[in-house]
Image (cartoon, rainbow, N blue to C red):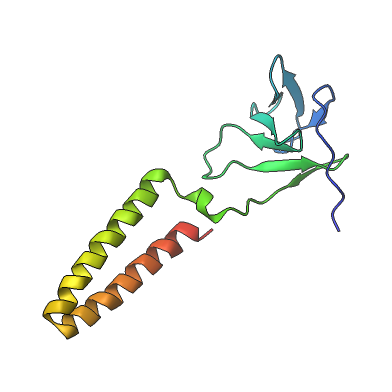
Length: 133
């Protein structure tokens, strides 16, 4: 069982969750900067989580303070990985595929079944590529 999280006090001194540096508060903000790795962090959700501001990862890493150490907090929102453009493309592709499938089934049953299998495999492959770690 993990220890309960404690609110992050903006006046306290904390270790960096990424390296061996120390977090220093950035004046007039709810943010911290590390003196060693130069990463920037912001305090989110009523002072419960510390989240890295600039990152190359698709999701910003975040941590909670236990009183002694930082514990990584995984994100559980699966739609967070999709951008608006990707969702729009997926919706547009689905509409086009349904229209093509409708025409194919009306003209030829074998062609329609092959197209249906193709339309099941391609979206499955897209989701697998999007969600793999």
